Image (cartoon, rainbow, N blue to C red):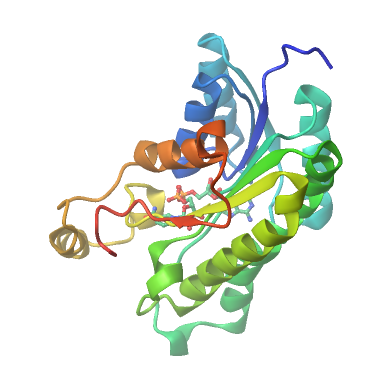
Length: 248
Ligand code: NAD
């Protein structure tokens, strides 16, 4: 591998929302970026083209994060293109709002498979390379609801709390290998995930937030970039919550 190689960041769920903003932030900061996406090939390809036109390095690789072998194959492809992964951002996620008593077993399982098994799958595929090189940084994406719990989001809150537990435990285990593991737990952010919320819900959330607004994907991306970078070299096992003061 050439010594002037750019560091390689792999970001899951990166064709839109927070993941896409993170892909742009990392690419513009000099990383080669692997955009891992589930199904939006056109959006992922458009993002790659945009970044390449700016002189950045990026590829798009398809995999459903719930599929162990698909994730392994995707990481293999990414490694062939950009070398071993230096930074992993585990961002892919789904949300749903309904009463606990209306959540079906399949819906509960899908939530756990996406957030928890998906996190296992991607970390399991990337971590051995980091351990053998004794360097690396992992940023997981949880949510304020993983810290506080949210009514009508028991499954989501459970999955996001698990992401925090995973982050803290792994940080303890791989710290001696010089690998940092941190978590970003955003408040409410303006992405497709919240399109189902009514204008009334949104206004209420803004009113409850000291900064009186919801966040942008770019603001979350900057927090992720900071935690992944050398600027956060003594930070590991931490949960940072960019949330406008909604939870203090
Ligand atoms: P989004 O719906 O725009 O993006 C989610 C991304 O995850 C999409 O690209 C989607 O395709 C991908 N994804 C979902 N299931 C997948 C799977 N099985 N395999 C691969 N990719 C999959 O939403 P977002 O707001 O950008 O969400 C990004 C992360 O931020 C999620 O983990 C979400 O839970 C978290 N989060 C979002 C908010 C918010 O208010 N938007 C707040 C806190 C945390």
